[in-house]
Amino acid sequence: MSASGTNTKAMEPGDTPTNRRWRPSASQRGIMIAVTIFAVMFAVYGWKQPMGLTANIVNTASNKGALLALVAMAQTLPVLTRGLDLSVGAVFVLTNCLASSIVVGGPVMTAFGIGGVLLVGLICGTVNGVIIVYGRLQPLIVTLAMGAVYFGISLAIRPQPGGSVNFELADFMTRSTLAIPHSTLLLLLVVVGIWIPYRRSTLGRAAYAVGSNEQAAYMSGVPIDRAKVLAYALSGLLAAIGGLLLTAVTYSGAAKMAIANDYTLNSIGAVVIGGTSLFGGMGSAIGSIFGAFVMRTVGDLLIVFDINPVLQPLFVGIVLLAAVCISSLRVFRIKNKLDLYR
Image (cartoon, rainbow, N blue to C red; front, side, top):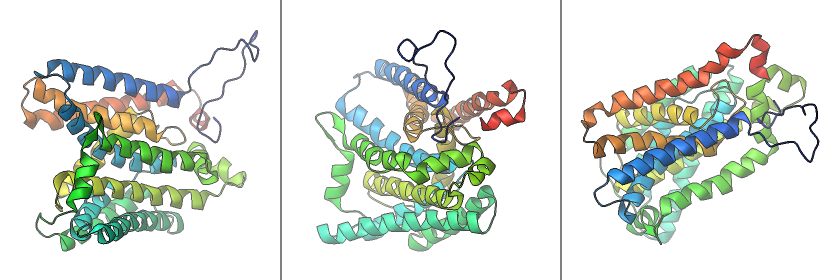
């Protein structure tokens, strides 16, 4: 496996640069599988809708899916470094509560409020990364503890659900133009503005190398510490963008542990469904986006098939367990533990 996280295969006998057929890497196969599953599920959802896939239905589905997609993208970056961020849901809720307090007023004040929300998310992620790297602690323990801290701050900001948000901003972020949801455009903007530059940067490639084999990356002079800190910092930033979108969707803020836990758990499922390996070193935030939409479509299908919504956690749990099991099949196929790092 290369440092960029894509599998490279040697040319087989008889292959030449001109006749060798393209074979998708494991990461690319994961994305294609997630896209296919989502397309089938959403087609069934539209078929069962009495009114079909109207612009309003598509826009609503996009808004719900984009919320989880942003948190799933936030989860993807630490997973690439063979870590796991259990605080993404708490940062998501924290920035939602903060946005409902400061993203108000006129255009100038709203702009400063948006900047403040994104800065807080970036700081939260950076704190996670610094403690993990320089404290030499396990990511699970650190992010679990810091998640509790961030949720406590959320309660201090918003003891009771409430608040507001700039109406023009919220309306713009949640409506659609020419049947194209603005929340989908937001995801595209995040991919183009954050994910692709990160993926092509030195530290982005270093994150893949660290996840593939940290010892080999260290011996090769890869900036391991900076790669890990940046991964967690951008994770906090992406979760903050999600928190801002949640405020636009709900027009309020709410410090609810159930929301934080739900998005954290589902983000892991979305990451795995999207083809990102929990062993690190392989995956893509783009796959996580489609994995998130798969997770959200599960709930929509329960509604159109008239299944009790109380059972939604059961079906989501089954999907999550199946996704993790499929990802773990790789372990049973290896003959040498060193193959995990190839």
